[in-house]
Length: 120
Image (cartoon, rainbow, N blue to C red; front, side, top):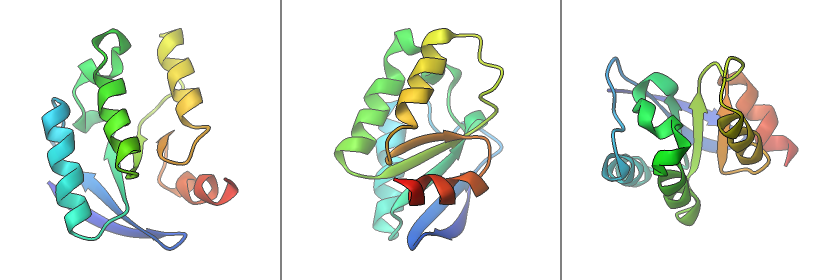
């Protein structure tokens, strides 16, 4: 796993890049959140491909559990992916609602984060 540091609107952001899945369950997410926080970061950017596909099946409740932990600990999370081709209405609604806040954001590019965090 590679950590790429970004500074977005004075927020220290860790973009995690990996060729393999790095979040398979709640424990993985908590470990990464703790490690990144300990290194002084205020936000994490993950790519959709580094998260288990089960996360995006809302019936599994994994997304809700993980995102609730990020919210509880006030750690910002951005998940990058192509969200235009979603066939699930519930996932589409979930992403839209998440994007209304500041802590959890689904985006197609890291460049859009700056405007999202500054508009709120």
